[in-house]
Image (cartoon, rainbow, N blue to C red):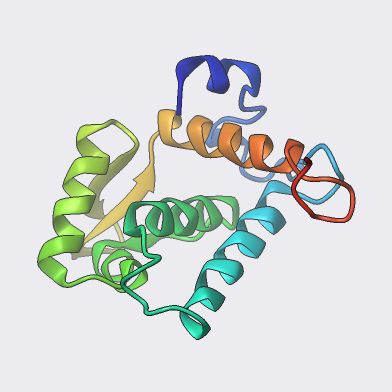
Length: 147
């Protein structure tokens, strides 16, 4: 996503404001609800197409991380690998790329030092917020894409 797009739809919350009111989209639902809807739509594509044809594990990981952040729920690397639908090796490479791009962060889980917790960085949160708002603005009131 371009920096211009992120600037057009700035995040309205910070890491410390997780208990604040949910971020509303242009058409009314929260960004969390929109992210869940997109996640469900992506899962349903497997009913119609081979799983590996319409798969973008980075997007699936970012959606799951955004949802987890909005729910103030921790995610570990193992859970993110499962969400990706890829082999462990491929998923870890994708996680490395997302971390290298400054979108996610891995840290030792304070509750269990054997695990690595994964969270969005502020840049990742801002990018996901901007992207979800962009998707929301590109849809009509009935949820169909604008022509």
